[in-house]
Length: 526
Image (cartoon, rainbow, N blue to C red; front, side, top):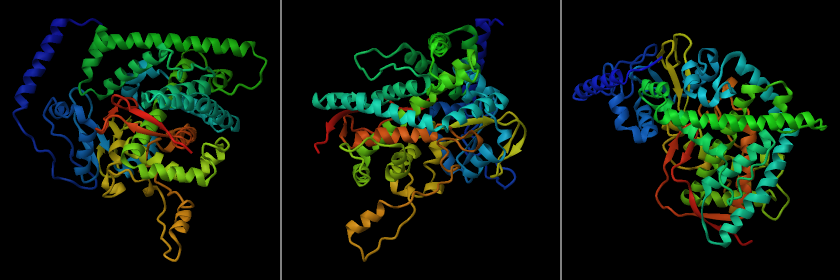
């Protein structure tokens, strides 16, 4: 299909004319009608034809907080967003709605073709971008592999190698030289090395800062950024026209995807040759396991890209924000983590951290990680598409084809869920309340605090790893990795952020800190 540039010019001229006329009118922000079976379009001001385009443009630099403000004002923590040239979007921070979407009526809310198209160039038919039988088959195989004892042991072994052999020496050198480093970039390099070893069985050695960033990372990051901006744009036809005409960002996306596919295909071919020539019966990495199960070609390539997306950016983002919070917002929590480490005999001078200790004993550290992800979720929102007409538990009507988005970033800031102090970094909220025994000394009460139980949190109030049938299979592995890294670092170093201004949270496919986290490293003298 070909497009005439003159027709494109006419389209945008007409659009700008309508935009300028409607901008003079001020529709009411909210409708006042509301019932349990039908809800009005609580959300941004909406106009005929162009929907919420004016409000979207005005708030384009603060979309997450804009949505959060609107959700906070909505009686049901749900809003309806009308878009130009596309179906409406229902955004919710209501736990009952989230449970209905992710579990109760899961079959009616798949990822859907619109999202598959947005992310299809990058993720293809990988597990994060498909539904139905293709998703179920990948899920079944991955579920088996992620629960094997051998994989758990392999993960801890890789973490020990990477942390003790590379990450700690790098931080020690930075401390000795009083050099400013970008901790976010360091953690991304670390998680890329780790996921490549665990998932692909290769060692890119990205923590060697003298080596340039591998082309596969550059291609992946540019492709992920452009793909994410497709999903956030209020006018879908623009990126579709740019793709059809091979212009601008879509041209660059195509180039990045081609580079990424070629490099990943080379990794797979090398792995297949290794498997064919190897006499070893047991290959621990996930790619070997999937290839041995018969997954190859484009599907294997798409699965590798999904591994990188899930294993690199999400955990690096969560750790970056936690280190900033512990350094700049709540250093008392940092000292509490150190106390927990010492109590469990897992300080820097003791034996390496084991799987069972990481999983069961590091409760306060676990609470700190959860609290950081509550405020700064690695995936700030996730969307589904309705297969048929439906009504959410709060009464919001959903039409076939509508996009339904649950919003972890906004949910973490809802007073209705987390209380009046929801904007504070407060790890203690993750523990069951415990009464102080006045007959005991402060030291004895502090010892009791070390035995407090973590709360059982409703996963639909805290859907950081999704929930229901599509709950993240790598959740346990992610917690183990984060705990190992944070415990190993925090027992040896302090970080002093260079910039005193609060950092900016940037949402793409996964979130990151704008400009990185520039810090000076200070080694603790034991």
